Image 1: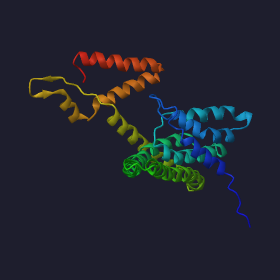
Image 2 (image 1 turned 45 degrees about the vertical axis):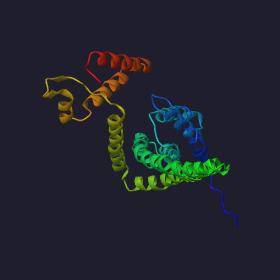
Image 3 (image 1 turned 90 degrees about the vertical axis):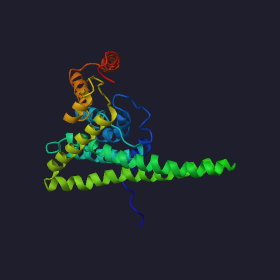
Image 4 (image 1 turned 90 degrees about the horizontal axis):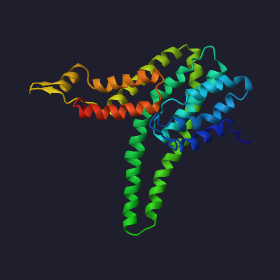
Length: 271
């Protein structure tokens, strides 16, 4: 008896191929958001294919244009899981909170980036090109070929099966979570993890310090660090968030950052 073909196999291949292009439209404002949107677009088009679903489709597109940044190979898992949640939301719009999709995406970015970058950038790439360079140095054409094969095979396996696993896990476990009434708890936990991810990004990516001091005993930066580490970075983030809520254009935000940084540095207020 021939094995029945999985009707969702086209989705797995969409997650696979499109996650390879997730950095093609990388931008400083929301980084991989357009690549993620490109990856999940075929599934959204399939879900919201009726003309009366136009508004829901528009909201779904907007939902996936928010900030996103993750290792490309592990992004297939997030694509699969998000696609599954979108289908769940379409089938049960009264009980499914669509903010859960965003919360789950945000909470997965940090852990999957940590695992993915360590494995692919810190291990596989070093191993592949270490072996390849040794062969190439001796004049063997197998050097670059071996490096490419060692780099490609793990990426292929994890990208394809990551997308498939994310989609099937979503279908299987989301239904169970709803049946057991645990979705609110999942939403709560994902929100906490998401806030921790955003907080760590602020602390690691925004570096603001003040050189202000009086005499040899009072150093303002030390006082601020005792009160709350990275206080200035957090304050700058809140100011940018407030300006975004006021719908200040992104060009003006960049201008404020550049001009403000230069002016405060010249005045000796910030490093």
